[in-house]
Image (cartoon, rainbow, N blue to C red; front, side, top):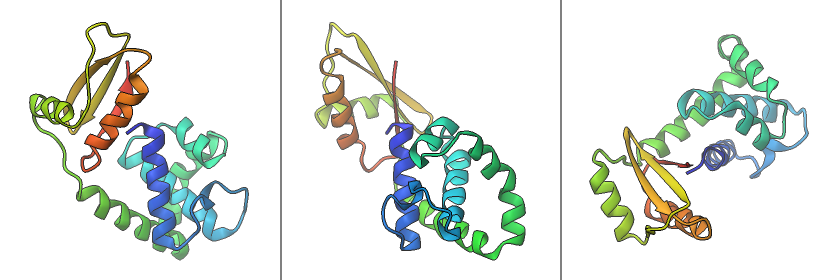
Length: 169
């Protein structure tokens, strides 16, 4: 998955765990429960998945500087604010339960065979390289400019039960 899709998934996990409507984290509201959920979700994304601040800010429809505030205030809020602590714990527990249920690959040849068996195709005359990473293993898929979006969909389908990222090289 791309970092943006990963973060949107984390936001979905957070809103589900807290019983909020989907997409509520990106609303322009100052209601305390949503502010706290937004901060906790952003902190988890930065620390656990190493998602870039710009992506978090874009998805939350906030300025990038607010992500520094979320990171700076985490320890203080966790120690002193019961609402933040309970919200963070709920989101983190839901995130870990889903994240731990997914597997990772430990052999790049096995991952390549899995991708090809599940519909991912490579071309000889390639313009774009997709780097699929699962755990510490990375596999490159060579594709054309016109077909790379189809191959990204195929990779997403093939890797739905695995923890992975896709980068376009």
